Image (cartoon, rainbow, N blue to C red):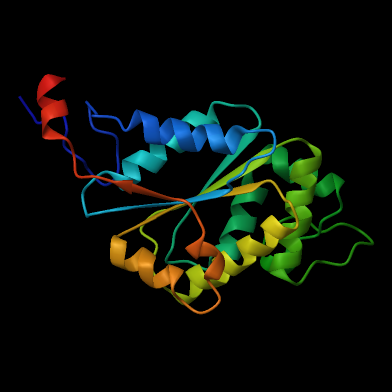
Length: 211
């Protein structure tokens, strides 16, 4: 018999000693009519199930019609990747076209006659998120294995602006202890210092044996 708890590249194992309370708390906070938290930093030792944890939360929210889930690769330019993935959603693409948001300057979207293309990515995302908000949708962004990189810092600073604009965007980001601490202590990342953190303990062998 193969080990039913084996973790393979973030895919859920056949059996899971779930962190139900921690997951339910995050889902409950994000789903409030006026959420008190819009982001959560998930940390823990290597192999403790951080990727599986945020994947389960994302899948739970994906089942709710008001949620749009976007998974971002931390090795890419994150703001442009976010705009591209939002625009690749067929429903959202129609919404952006109706709102006359011309995204051709970024290499995607369709040209809109008489409407100049948006050339600033933060401005483009702000317009896109406002259109999403008008349709009573929410966007959950997940970033797995974040580090204190320039792209992550730029994205985090833009995310803070989106929150100040009261846009419907939420963030789940995972990372090892030292990577998250370095990011939180980086210049200009003060707001991450106040962000809620979920610390995942190593897998509970007693719970696995009982299950």
